[in-house]
Length: 41
Image 1 (cartoon, rainbow, N blue to C red):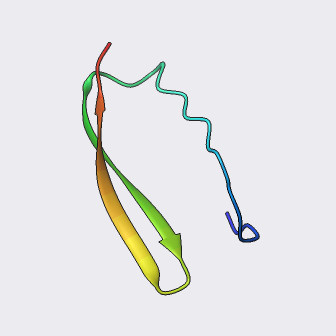
Image 2: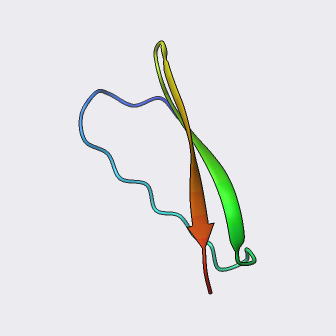
């Protein structure tokens, strides 16, 4: 989803996911970042 520059929040619904380690990616023009997220239920 393309957005204008600035501060943004993303709501993430993990109700149907199991506990575990997930990867997420942020991308902006030439910048790409992949991070780990730990989901514990």
